[in-house]
Amino acid sequence: MGRILCIDYGGKRTGIAVSDPLRIIATSLTTVETKQLFPFLKQYFQQEQVDLVLVGEPKNWDESDTHATPLVNAFVNKFKKDFPAMPVTMVDERYTSKMASQAMVEMGMKKKDRQVKGNVDQIAATIMLQEYMRNL
Image 1 (cartoon, rainbow, N blue to C red):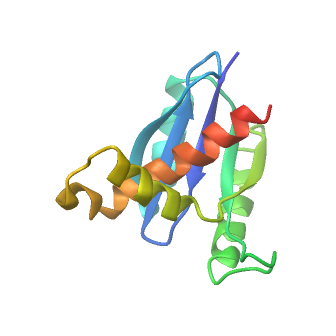
Image 2: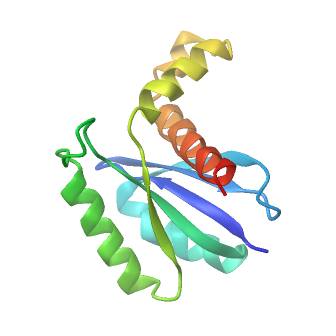
């Protein structure tokens, strides 16, 4: 069984989380500059068996699109062209950044580390992945 990779796509940075091969635990993997995302993914897919990619879908509380929705949709379309054999599933990303910030406080993370936006992106991706696996 391969891993599940989850992407919290952003205009500047993209947070990435991954499951273990048995799909029990979600772990923060890294934050990548968005312009380096496709080379990173290509290399990662060569090194690890990934069976599914999740992408956070930005929506407002009323299900309407956010300002980031077209950006994420463009990424997904390019991803499908570059990696046509890799299944992609959109997952709800509402409130994950807020939950990530709260989780960092609860973990006792220093304020300086909580201000690193890449940490929020990684943890948000981890929350989305863990929620997806819990609902399997």
